[in-house]
Image 1 (cartoon, each protein chain N blue to C red):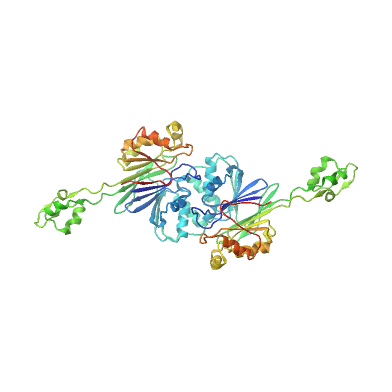
Image 2: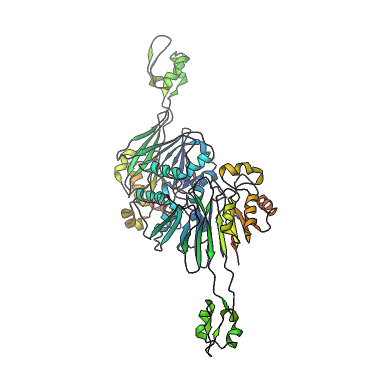
Length: 302
Length: 302
């Protein structure tokens, strides 16, 4: 599981601070999460192949999370993309893109499929053989979802000595990996757990931006490997967080602690703070495993 | 008259090539012309004060000319702008901006005034004490205007020796500068031309992008001080220019020659060409006074 931060600052794009966008690689999928202005240039800078992006998830319709989307869609067209593109985002996102295409008298030569979201409950919005994606309803000034990316339970590992000792035919190995009990050469049923071990622990990633401090998300993100939680403010500006429906670094860490996550990644920093290390220090006072997002940073979670 | 090129490449933004946007300073006005994705970052990089921009002119609704607009409007709001902002652009531009504001549940705290254009004839769209702006109807794949910025005739210069010799009271100097005949201390009428000289020659700037080769614009831009004309292609790709409704460097130079312009500035280069100097060489074979736009370049025309 690999996470590339293309932008992690709030509000407006600046020369050195990009608005929210990130790429999550999970089981050979490449998911683009949010798409602030300038995202396509960031993708180019980080040499991410445009055609590998087949699913784009937009948390909400504030500009710093999606103003780069229509340009990216348009660039895909100019580069004669043929691969389908799925867009998951709040109701209204289709109209925004469609109106601009219509007025430009153009349309995509590839299939553009919108999945508009409007539920206030968590829902499964994407599923493949090895990955599931759920929404995480967030509390912000407008309708907003986080996204939970989960690897499915992988194959069990054969305990090859035990398999051979139990006289199981090679033809049944795949069934064993899939967790089934099988019959051996002597006609006996062999319990799966006797001859296999658990496979790799499935990884999971929860993206939660933008949101006010909200404990009701905790059950949804319980024990995730990695939580990206917004921390627009420091505790000293806690009074700004509530009315703008944002969180502080301390609050993000509290959520991480309650949910018992593996790693907390902080992002969506207000550009009012010169040095973002203070976000980490503040969060570390509450939770021990904290990382800072940074434009261009790549995290590998093995 | 000062022209700052923020972006001068066609199609898609890249790490080093920005789509169309430029700032024209004329008689203390600061006009923003086109606003491709990333324009607000380019404005910051070139330290152009956001509040000095009161008029934005959008040529047409292809993304590389306006995808940065909604973000810029939104950033102005976040920076608590109070100064009015006028947007001139094709019909539909208001709906695009309004829809996105509505879905973000936000509106500007400053006055945002749209001037939607739909005429196929040149029209006066802005006038102040010292400047006029006219549309230049262009021929492109969708409805497109260029813009002609004209300084008004300035004050005449006093020939102070002649003024004194003619015994004219200081109270009449302003009237003389404005071109009127005045009465002197002896009660005689003094012809203005006897005691004044012409003021500075008014400058003019014509922005023509995007357009196919089109001689019908020539009368509108006759004798302008500076013509910015698109040259997406070189003559070797002339066959691409016609169907895409773009021009070659040679064609841009032909228009410059027919219109007898002071300086031709070439821009809107396709990124297929590694070295843009070939555009200049090609144009110079037709017209002698050619400059190349370049992202970040500042032209001063005195």
